[in-house]
Image 1 (tube, rainbow, N blue to C red):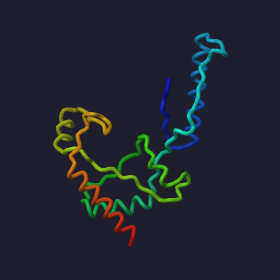
Image 2 (cartoon, one colour):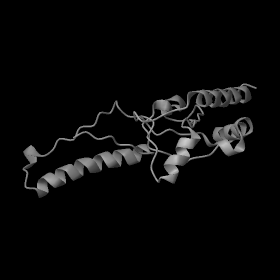
Image 3 (cartoon, rainbow, N blue to C red):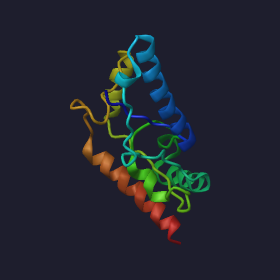
Length: 154
């Protein structure tokens, strides 16, 4: 069995990994499996993507820029997600380099309304059914990045 473990904090990750080992061995013992045949839990330490940390001060600054350049109604703060993302590496483990990961909506608003009306969930980013609308997505990305750079490079 192979699993992906995602947490927001390294100490929570270590606890979850230890618990997986304990649960696997506990289930085996409860089933009467002798210790020499118990599951072996191994962790690939080099396949870790730490949680992305958006620097609060930089986020606040850039959200103001994006609301001005993209329109207040087009910018929203969202709760953290558990996506596996290597963006977290840019700010270094100690977060000494302030970073902000921003997302751009890429789906036709009519398609969003249709799915919402039908109570269905939109296809996810990595689905073969994900259908981006290229021109506005690229335009918004360019405006967002350019406006951020112009303010940050002053």
